[in-house]
Amino acid sequence: MANSSTTESAEALFDATSSDGDGRASPCSAQMEGFIRAERPALLSWLRSRTALEQDAEEAAQDCFMRLLRYQHSKPAFAWRFLLYRIAPSVLADRARRTKSHHAADHVQLDGLDIVSAEPSQERIIAGREELALLRTAILDLPPKCKQVFLLNRLHGMTYAQIAKHCGISVKMVEKHIHKAVTLCLAKVEKGG
Image (tube, rainbow, N blue to C red; front, side, top):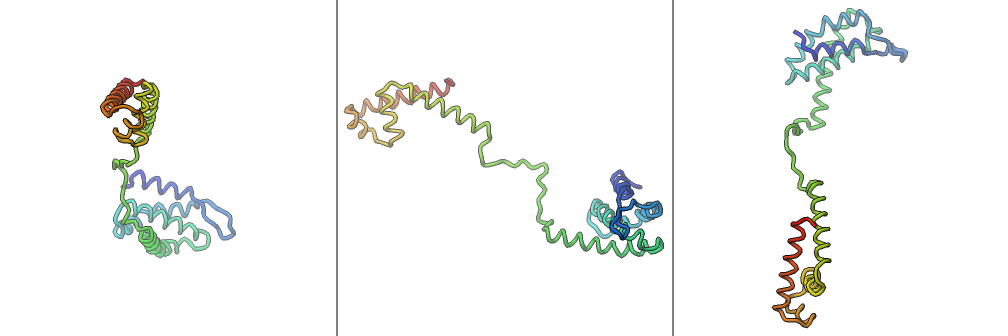
């Protein structure tokens, strides 16, 4: 019983063209079309017994008939069956070589797999840029002394003691400025502006 892909494959063959020896394309003859319709089930059965998948047998049959079309005008119709079964093992061998050379057994199907990237999503990148812009604005809006102490610590990596000496204030005052800066910046970023 032919399924729809078998029927579609057969129909594609009848629309195919072949070379008639002088380079011109000629359509599949009615005699060849009848031969293909008659031989297709037997060829598919023969190919199914030698391939792992139904689809492989279908594709191999298509390849066999396409190769056979080259001979429709150069060989008599009574020789086509013999040619077809000489072509078929050749097609299977070609497909096996192609599969082996392409390492098909090592291929992994990606359909249905959730592949997660280690890279952040575009949404996360945009959100990060927005948060960075808010933080920059929050730092720029800090009171001058508070901003200076915060930047000396976070940007220049100075210790509280170094900042105290640099600014002429106590370490305790540096701690208060840092605490105030962090609190104001967090509030502004969490508020969103």
